[in-house]
Length: 460
Ligand code: PFF
Image (cartoon, rainbow, N blue to C red; front, top):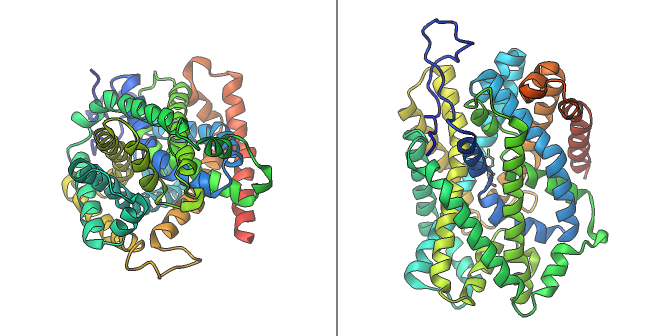
């Protein structure tokens, strides 16, 4: 239906048709193709696994309000900023920042690549859990005690490490082939299917006996639980969920055509991602209370609660299997967007071949994933600031590195690109007031808000 570009051509970007014989960079063939790829990056484990447990740990409704406020102010502004950088430069994050801002700004690109590598490492551990759940539900059905089954599973490295490896191998395979072929096209009907099951799950969860306490927790804000932690966690969750602050959206933006309306595309991606998170909240939080569990269960929350909801549904094991398969695919369309910027960088800036680079980075990230996989089992006692390896890497990236990247992106587009960015924003309305509002958000409120949250957090 639409054609997805092979991610990186390895050729220098084409300036405006100078007849130098350079091969043009491949572009998304349609607006919908780009939106599905970018939404595929955004919608993933961040929505279904991370969002509900972070809401649970941070007071419920208050967190939801702060989160939505951040997403629709800072989040969308920074997503547009990344797309603008990518489309203007037509290259990988390091090359793009250097080309547009001069050598020191390459540092912004490097920060993003390190974040991408670290996130990729623990992302494939949790994606491995998802794969395992699809498989066990299909072959063995429901465990009698889901909480205990989850504990036993994550405590077993002989299971968690291989499944993380399988997921990483799938990610490598897709990126190796260029994302041109099946998977992105498949998104076109897989994403709506995932949404459909999420909605069905949500309907089931909110009608469970005892669910109303969970609904109240999720929707009725209790302002006494608000604190600086609410802001930090909401900021980190927003960046993680929207795939911003590390150059993934820059890379995707570099395959965009001039004619495309960036703000509108960003609006779609942010809207779909937020809808998915909200539905996941409805599917999980009421069920937590109905099952008599604590919302502060932590990273295992979705994996403990969802099987209990599926178990109450007709054909529950079937739906459950399908759901975890779809979630694995959603995770895959996210993990490829973590690997691709790294691969593009090495091809571009070091003239390496796609095949070798993809396998080498995937393998290195897999090695780094092993401590994360062990951290919920045999290494549970090795903690820093009370966090095991997986939690620590997650907090370091989502909580600090992505917001720091976002801060720099805001400053870069606001002050270094400045009016040049307005031209990229939306060609049809160069002087539109909206574009200037966006630029001024990036110039002053966005950096101040992010810096303030980071500093307040550090002082604690
Ligand atoms: N946004 C993805 C999710 O919510 O699962 C995770 C992610 C993908 C974060 C790509 C960052 C990124 F660059």
